[in-house]
Length: 594
Image (cartoon, rainbow, N blue to C red):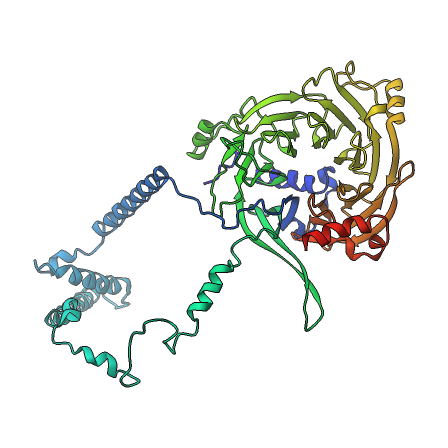
């Protein structure tokens, strides 16, 4: 059973809805009942070939099986005791009307049912004596009827005993040739192979072909896999979606892509963010797996093995509630469980995995902190406290893997080197609550950041001032001017909140934005000029909460939102993209993959 902390479920849903509406005040959230019922709050791509072609099934520990057996045995004993108490307190003692024979137990139950039926009827006779006489007569008849039924049952039992049905198949006198004369006349009941049997439609050669071609349950090397964090009204899941690119039908000449859920994992709380990784607890440096870190409304970060189909618990947990307190609360304790001191103290809103230092994961939380984790030891190695409000998003620099950018509800972005976070820290004024952040694919010293006002801005870290002396406090006018000088450009990308921004690593200068207005937009950034809109697409997933380019197939972008569905946008399907300077670069990835 999943542990749920003792706070109001209604309040949990309101906080989750607030996140889905990009952290607006609760009184301003006006989501429909469909949006409340099911939505997808986060997605993440898995590299092609990273998933196991044949997923495994979880092995239930013997200790858990033993505990389950004992729990079921205790429950069965309690039910048996309650049934015995009910039978002893029955109004009619059927022992007075039964013999001492072993089979009289059936008689007792028959008489009990008959007598109870008689007792429930109410005779409206004029005198009490008449009532008693009638009842006594009916009881006597019921007893006689029950005894007759029991005697008949004993007679059937004796007849079956004479037939000796248990040894019926062992009769040596049975004529084996009868098998060859049943139904369709004399015929052979066995054949040397499936090729000789006319009634077998799948021949041996077909079986061999099926073994060469895995069934739909397997994941092929060329399958594209997308992770989605689904939240429903009464449950939350981590879903593994498989996307198969569109193939042209030779007969209809139509192209249709295939997108379906391969399997899912139940989560204990409303999911807010995801991060795929190939390293986990006690993982050998040379062995790579497929894992997903999940941040929820709980303060802990759960890491799940994606190659295990029916996993019931994560392979590792970073921070979260103390295990002993969870057991106490689950057993009926009313006190709120304690949160581990080294972990986050509130919901986890964002995460970023470091692909160079594979055991390193960064997380952002509503407790105003950013933490750096060593996944292999499940320990927190660094805590950053520069933000003065909730931290919403963060990402590692693709070139300098020790440099981290983060954005929060204090309307500021922070850039720091985790090797010396106090000495190497930069501050940027965004102007509104931050929603999403990513480093530029064209120039890794610049980053893009979106906010709740629908804007996207680009900042150059070389032009920013140091944040050494600010201590997270309000910056002076001189500092504000330094921040303005670091801002390269700012655009109004959407009419509503810009929920995500993602750079296309296959064609530097192209980046994607999404919004709660339900649209995706592809932008073209030229050096020294403001980005221009290249293409737009209606995702069809309701209000878009998350969108991301595939790192390995950069012409594909996945999106999800309030409708509870995932969609994939092939930007090369847009004529404007193919005819632009980005078209030839992206077509190379398409040709190589296909």
